[in-house]
Image 1 (cartoon, rainbow, N blue to C red):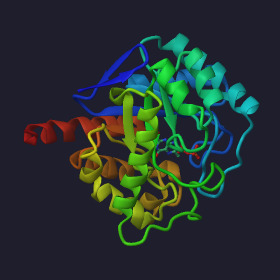
Image 2: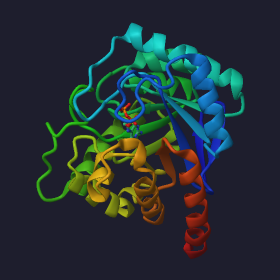
Image 3: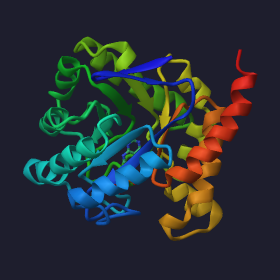
Length: 285
Ligand code: HH2
């Protein structure tokens, strides 16, 4: 199976590792570390050497403590020089732009991004589906509720008894919106939005029920890296120290049908997923 992205495709015949490059002063686990383009490009090169298949560049944090939305101008100033620097350093590695703004996505694509990662799943900017359809980028549609400021809080974390059914129904509606705007089905990847408008129990239930999301017929990405539920289970307070918990969650997600994994710690996840995959794929029909 191939995930179609702008200018090519990414094979999904082994786990795809998406390396996180946050160009933000306030991200919950790595804020401020990679803000200048040269440092960011070095970080991207390191992640690719460790086995990342795609580099996800983001200029607006959604941190759980409540994020401060950034202006279009500020977001562009953060991400565009970094996308250019990463593309120059790694011309063969696709880049994704993590944004909810169509104008930032468009500029990111012009700077070389091949994928748009929209944590609002096309909810927050009506122009986003058209930008993606017209440019033929790969599209990561993530489930969330609310705005950038509160989507990673519990403000909208009310689901009744069936969190999985509710999330899948909301994501399916976003897929319909994308398809109606002309987004090709082969470009779409779905993401349950771990920790976004979800308490830890919701996130764990969604991960356990990944096979239900897989039945929609699109490749599934999970973003569990260093997140709160891992800290709670392992009693590790510092996000950067949640690597082994992250690996455990990703291996479980792989076994339950996820094929793309958004991570900060590439080497550990790459190795674990490769070993797990050698077992999992032998059991697939
Ligand atoms: N999680 C974060 C940001 N972008 N994109 C997708 N598709 N899936 C995710 O789970 C996801 C995402 C939040 O994590 P991070 O980038 O580490 O933190 P911050 O939002 O504080 O920058």
